[in-house]
Image 1: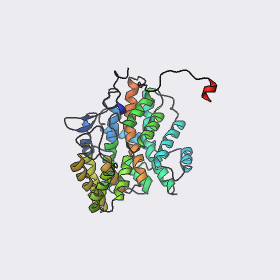
Image 2 (image 1 turned 60 degrees about the vertical axis):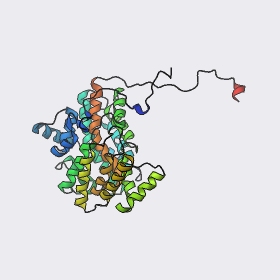
Image 3 (image 1 turned 180 degrees about the horizontal axis):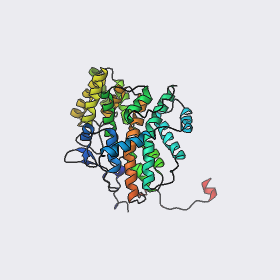
Image 4 (image 1 turned 90 degrees about the vertical axis):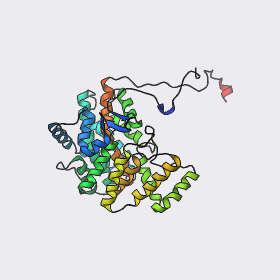
Amino acid sequence: MSDQVEVRKGLVGVYADTSSVSKVMPETNSLTYRGYAVQDLCEECGWDEVAYLLWHGELPTAAQLEAFRAEEKANRELSPALLGVIGAYPRDAHPMDMIRTSISFMGLEDPETADISDAAQRRKAMRIFAKAPTSVAAAARHAKGQPVIAPDRSLSWSENFFHMVFGKVPQPEVIKAFEVSMILYAEHTFNASTFTARTVTSTMADIHGAITAGIAALKGPLHGGANEAVMHMLKEIPSPEAAPAWLESRFDHKALVMGFGHRVYKNGDSRVPTMKKYAEIMAEVVGDKRWMNTSAVLAEIMLRRKNIHPNLDFPAGPAYYLMGFDIPLFTPIFVMSRITGWAAHCFEQAEDNRLIRPLSLYTGLEQRPVPPLPARG
């Protein structure tokens, strides 16, 4: 039997289902959302427009966008109970564990948790989308012993997040760079966390459970945690001039270089040029080019020596650092964006649902009898 079955570790090359949410177009090497290239969406649209697009299939009209924004703003506040839970988190806990727990707690409170109709799932998704930045910001300030800052409905989704983390809204160039990162991180076909969310949805579980599971999958350094690892790596290198020797040492020890390579892209991650552009704008705004200069050296050597291109995490890490975010907050920010993609896939999975239940090829012992007690002694 084993000679006739091909086992593809990591499900490489396996088509598990159909989807109309996103695709990497091979002829242009572009990631597209609902047919639109993400690099074009970054330049032409705001973050909330792209969130609407992912959930509804088309870009919003002015009236639809106004209604979408109003619904989001109306759902930002956290309950006193959840604020109390956040206040009880260990301050040294990882923010990813905090946001995972916060989303799960929201499921305990939500009056529609058990209702998995499409309309209810969409309402719950909006509540999660609106409350996730509030939860991330509250946990970040709690970890530092700072008072929580309430959301401000007069601000946009992105402006409000900076307000809740730092107590102020930065200049427009920073907000634009942040929104670009949100658009680029929002969705990426059947990646590990998205497939996890779809698997949970296939059991007819609620969307809070699916997104909580997605967060757990995203925490790993081979997935979402890579942007944190990239910045820790860059901080090990004292200067751009020291980068070649540092990289040679990694080669000598066959150590992993974070932020390079991708399962889907073989000729370079199509999202990288756009994120790199805005990371360099951040370096100009802040007046600190060290991280981008070091990154440029690493990218050139990796391509020349290993023929490996950087992925989105490579420029996103220093971009977030230049925005002022603490490194452990990078992946929770990724969560705030990817909630839109996860939810889009939860909606799609539920439309024509079938329980996801693959097979495994058994390689253990053949059936055998349990030996008598003396023999086991």
